[in-house]
Image: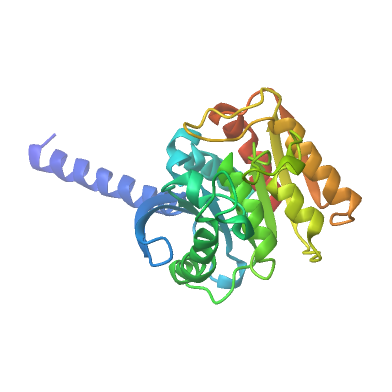
Length: 284
């Protein structure tokens, strides 16, 4: 074959292949890194943003905010979301992973800031979510209001997620807690010496609010998490106590809560459980 003709045929074939691949590429889940300066936290907050292809109708877009966004690559969150979306199991979704700063200070129970062993800036982190991160997510997605909003976290990040969801049911409709630090206590309070009844338990026990939330809990029997410098311990007992309290106070009804049990409290266990939560919160 004439070399020029061969070159032409090869070039045309590659162009056709590229054009054929473009629609498929556009349909995949995307991941990008971003940052947001927080006046409430007085620092730059690194963000990992994962998004499915966006629909023509913005009213169909959902939002998931995750504490401990620095774990996303380790947990393969992008691959999980992409697999579920390609199987048509996932609604249009934006996932914002918030990279932790000082997680023992920023993750906690907002009303107990300064009174707890840790979580002294939990009120600042709550304000960051409400006044800075949520508006950022709406602007990023180009929406005035999301179809639904969930928040999730791991260990102390899970404690924070439940605290924020409870504080802002006007924005958040569901919460996922992976191995939550529900055993965290107030300083020098012998009345809260039970393994299970920590600060969040007391907050729920004394709450007069009855926010309508969907709950998803994971707890492993091993007792502690493998997150460095985390203070999550007695996880299964503490998680069960919180769930039992929610049921006893009629804060939840049948169908409002999923409790997933496992053997361990680590990234491998959370990665295996994460698809179930996504389908629960944002499944078609």
